[in-house]
Amino acid sequence: MPFNYTLDFHTVDFRQHPELYRVGRGEQGVLLVQPYKGEILPFWRFKDAAAATESSETIYGLFEAYLKAGDFVGADMARKFIQMGFTRARRYANHRGGKKYDGPVPDDKKGQSGAHGRAELPRTAHPDVDKVEAAAIFKRKWDEAKVHPEYLRQKEAFLEKYGK
Image 1 (cartoon, rainbow, N blue to C red):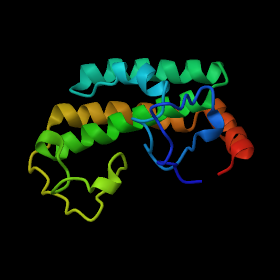
Image 2: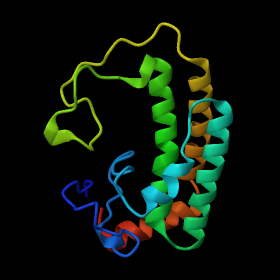
Image 3: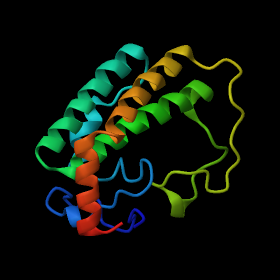
């Protein structure tokens, strides 16, 4: 099932109500789903290789802790933050200042990812090497997380119980 952006994310506790969570696609909901956003976001950094290494290892540790606790939603959110470390570092490597699309996000699309009809701005001729390395660090952790056997087992069980 697609990610449900109509929920009141200010009041829903997804640890108490995992049935409301949807895996969605990619990073959908990563900056909305509480209490996980509040638990993971303080560790999310991608400014350079050192920050990305510390951040990705810390968040991967949270990912494993959520799995150990049987908390698939937390594990999936940690996976999304790791994925977002990769995508944001690549964005900042390719687009100075991190602005990828021309113009503002349409009001009815705020909180959702995508171009939403906006043109992509030109990429820099010389990608930021610190951000390229930070992206590679997060990519390795993301690749590890998305094939983790316990993550895959819990994901299958979650989708079976709450729907695709």
